[in-house]
Image (cartoon, rainbow, N blue to C red):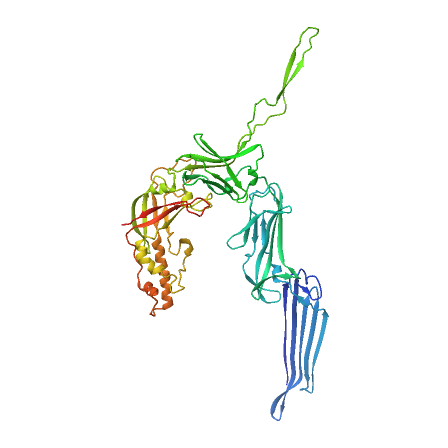
Length: 606
């Protein structure tokens, strides 16, 4: 009886990869097609047996007549360069091993490429877009060129490089410049939060009616043994660069209010305190130095005028290095008046007589033999005369307060009543004082706006020196031994914002917090209905629970504890007590950090 067994199989695998600018050892130019190169193999095998089963001496026995096996492997790398290697191997056994052996055949075509790796970062397009768009014309001289990136700049990321190893990289901004010909325009670069959009803030406005070029350049760095090293390809630092060109428009002949970062008096200020400070200034976002080089036919002056025709003139200075107009505010301004602050170009000399360009010519008349002398006078205008008119280069309306100083205003506020309330659902105390005042705070004072650099002019802070509740109950519990246990600190808030002791957790509320001066709108009248709110207990309580939870986790109910830990674990949070809670109400000028003046309000809940 004959038998046969056969088995066969086949398969292949291939990898197509972009090697960027990688080259073969000893050759120049990238491999493959635009860096794409294939590397793969195909294989097949066969096994078989043929035999006979016989009965010998009463027993069945299988005898192989033929036993054979073969396998083939074909490897290839292609294209450019092409390389292939084929290997065929086999074994055979005939007549139960009477004849047997092995065989192997190999063939190679082409020359194998020993890849010299470039870098995986070559395949990354980092710069997504640059604005203004390339070739655009009449671009606003206040425009802010932007660069948009596909990856955050300066942030570490990991990739598998062309050599198969995982590596750490980061992107570095090498250059973000605007050029007017060969001249680099001064400025600075600002970023969004994720670090993937950059803006170029020119120090002055862009040069008007010029062909300008924006260039953005980035490079890569690789972390090598803990140090950042530039990524190089073929011996050169790998960089990505994008340049766009555009033409700027005209420069304005005045200071647009949109170019004011902050000023004093403030644009549309409702409560200008005439005796608060004699400082006057206009801080520009972008410099406009050309406005302050008017030529010999002009003189420049500042003036403040009211609606009744009264004018107060003053001299001013423009500092091109700081982009600021500065002056001393004139004396004589009145309370509760509408004013306009102006910077003017005035003619340097008066125009003169209106007939100053007229010339007279006398011509004798013929007498026709008569003894007569007569002449006629002709008058002719030579050219034209021009009358220079005053020109406004800045104008901002404002209104003076009923009070000449900020302190006088706060001292005029009357505390109607004070009480203790509860934050629901937490049952945490707060104090509120209701204030009677004939003049409220304006938007610039409460919240700030675009003409104060978005900084509020009024700030409040608790005076802790005579605060019995804090000094008797809170200080020793939370802050006397801070950080507790050497390193146990508040984790849920930034203590730089309100202070470690949250003394800045006091606010002012008003029915209308967006009051500004508008010449076309009647001024507010009546009781301003202010409320001062003392919110410190909310933060005391949250500081208490934060530190108490940390202490509980650290010691896990296993005494003995250090004394400050024992105190916070065994003391209930103290309830707010009636008493006197003084607060400072402070005022500062726009763009300044120092306090201009302050007054005290006493909150006394019963």
